[in-house]
Image (cartoon, rainbow, N blue to C red; front, side, top):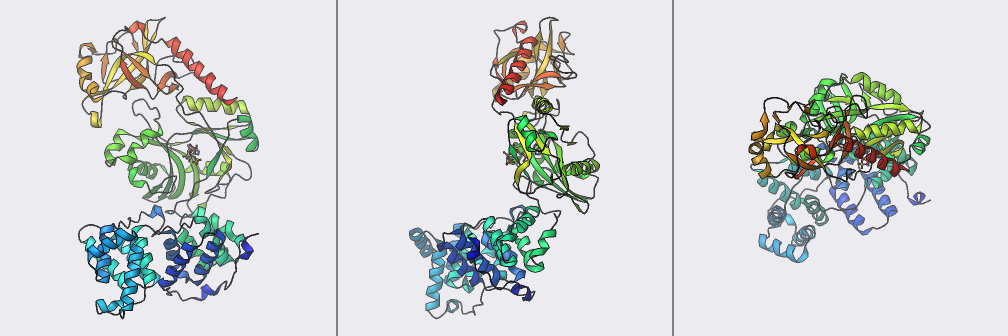
Length: 618
Ligand code: ATP
């Protein structure tokens, strides 16, 4: 019983504050100073409670952001303050009438520009007022002025912005009391580091406005539904703590994602979720939370960053295929190969994040979306609705096509069915399955990892231990960097019985730039006008080759694919066998096409792989 120690006073007093009330910034600076000296979380919470109680409701959001060392939640994309040491040194020298070199020297010996500013400010005060430097009147700083200046500094970009920043910072410092100067400088440097986490702020808000820690759950749920602590503080302060009980998600404010627990035994999984559940493919991509408000689409990541700019194509698909005017949906964005339709791994998708040329990347790494939840449709908050209802709504509002799909799923009641679906999922390039409860409590628990969702993943390490030798039967011209060159080859295995070559994979990785430069010339003697009569292929490459050149290939694992003709219909109706993530190792000119890996051998390898996966589960 630690919490009752915290003294609660003055509940409700704040509501009486005037709407335009502000707060002296010195209160914040003093609180920060005290926080630095405190090591116990209880004492820290108490201090925060006291500070929050003194804060007028209309600036509470700003105070919360200042405590977090931010100007707003990360997803708001407020530009970085980006104040380099050099600019700060200049601003300090301007504010306190010091030589820049003196500031640099002081910095080199003390290492803290915040403390140096504080010292200069004190000296100025002793000399009969800092403003005597410039002959102006000092104006006491308020939270609003400091915060708004920080915002202006962040948003001033481009030509002339350096001068503007200098003016704003030195202006603040001139008016700042010594302690204020310390924290203004530290904030601008991004070195506030008070070490106050969201959890402590949530505790302090519950105690300050609700009178007890018992409100913590309510406030936290509100925060999970609207991931903006400043906004939550504002609602609690202005409308009372009870008002957050009815809080709904709002389009444009990300919802903290529901997370899954992990288990490996299908029987245990079913028991945990109450005997039956939905089993869905667990796709290997990036989670996206899609907010649609008419024509405006926003996409947030698992970590609630705004990633709309990285996926303009996805934003278009959502706009086009989601029939509701307003909606918040969740799904996985997955890269795929447009020629074969095969899903590509997460690592490939991540190239989109690193590259600047998004529009080129959109062509090189096309993506699709697999939707798996609906959190808001129209004005209806679905987070309190059960999974079967949310799924029904998701299906109602989504028009499926090549780019937008509902995650593949079935309802299961027995472990064998679950296991069968798991094997199917991994054979088709998924990472495993998500098993989701659909009982009377299967609501969307934002921000919480619990047993309503359980993930069953296959071991990610390479399942294909042996290399295979395959013959090249066709080629594709590359795009982007490989534009105009033959950058990808179509490979086949050997059907000994019928003496034909059946396709297994397209290989585009493992080649050096030199290999790529020489590729066309290498195959020139073998280019033929149409498919070779001994080649069986459902894929149409840009160039057909005589089956002559043999290469050694390694892949992550063997997988079922509707596109390749190797072992077609032999393992499953409508599917052939393919190699996932194949890589070229070397040419095997010592081998002729009849010496390569046979269909039968590949089938054996696939069966061994399945056995290995099953053994791992026992
Ligand atoms: P976690 O997100 O649970 O902290 P993590 O980031 O390592 O863990 P995983 O263990 O791979 O991710 O599992 C969760 C992720 O799986 C989700 O965040 C989501 O991106 C992804 N996912 C893929 N398919 C689904 C699906 N059908 N339902 C829910 N999540 C899915």
